[in-house]
Image (tube, rainbow, N blue to C red; front, side, top):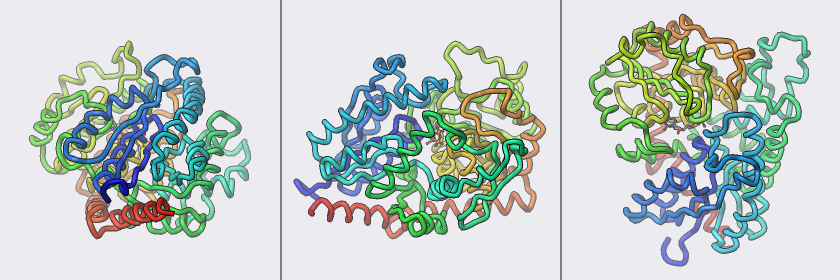
Length: 485
Ligand code: UDP
């Protein structure tokens, strides 16, 4: 595609690392296929992606950023709180949702000015469907998760199995989610909050569903072979149009690309690589819980002791809860004792670079979809520790569907640290699961083998001739035809 015929796509991610990171990858993928990609971003968030975009532009890709000011002051948020990883309380979540709603009008101004051929917008921008329609432009939804979890969410919504459970029942007794290709079980305690009555989020989720139904289709960061039954279920049973175009993280091939996803890492990437180079293949456990989750100090203490007593080398990413927080959770003398054996990264790690290193043998994760898919692409098994959002669904995908991981035993959905409602995962439990998964038992070996095969499938899917490559071509062709009309 050249000259005036070049297709122009607007990509508007939800302001959260888990959405901005894959959306930027998608923008780059589309630009590499000859499209002009414009990422819509708020000023603070634009800073973190500007380096990558600059490098892409230098290499000849047609990729750009347009900023829309974030109305923090208007909703009573502090300046600079422009991403979900800076949001620390339920009140702030409500304000954040209100701020996102105010972006519609400036977004429409941009649409009017540039008239892109199509829009890929994040799920929490439900009004984007209507905005795009005003200009006769198709809007495609990006949920940032798999067809499996979209199907689980939809089944829960349609069949409401949780309504049949009495309020006196044990919140940890399980029920089967009806209408799915596999028998998937979950408990009341794991059910996301938005199913439990009216709250700002429940209202938002309704809008998200409605806007998806009116949109042109759904872009999925996953690959067909990973979840064929659910890809078909979502398409044929629920009647949604989808394109599986992932894993989009595989777009990042060199060290800089892998190290600079999202924020700049707080550790030198060459230091990490050297550290990993000194370790045996498959010997290191990587521990990270994404960009938003919060873990109580008591729980961090148990985790520290569990990791230490497992005896396996580890890299552990610890996010600071607040800038003024004292690090009270590490046991006495911990860092001296683990020197050489454990590497603690404070705040932001070059995650994909680490996962792709041959020394890394498993990933302890909060089951954010990007993290899981990055682990899947690296061909390693997972230790699952879901906390909120659709993370419990994702855990079930790993442990019950593709069976490449062991659960740690997290029981309660918890967006915010609240020791009263969340049971502590004890150090013994943590050490046992780590030792089993990293060990030489038959089950662990089989899991490793399966994970490796799926990782190879993931890589094939994005190469020319692979399923994700083909789906991306199909999307581009369809948008070309639409634009001609
Ligand atoms: N990530 C990273 N370094 C970190 C923590 C996270 O690069 O220290 C990246 C990770 O690779 C993933 C994203 O941030 O792409 C987190 O998304 P995910 O869906 O896993 O979790 P969320 O942050 O949305 O809960």
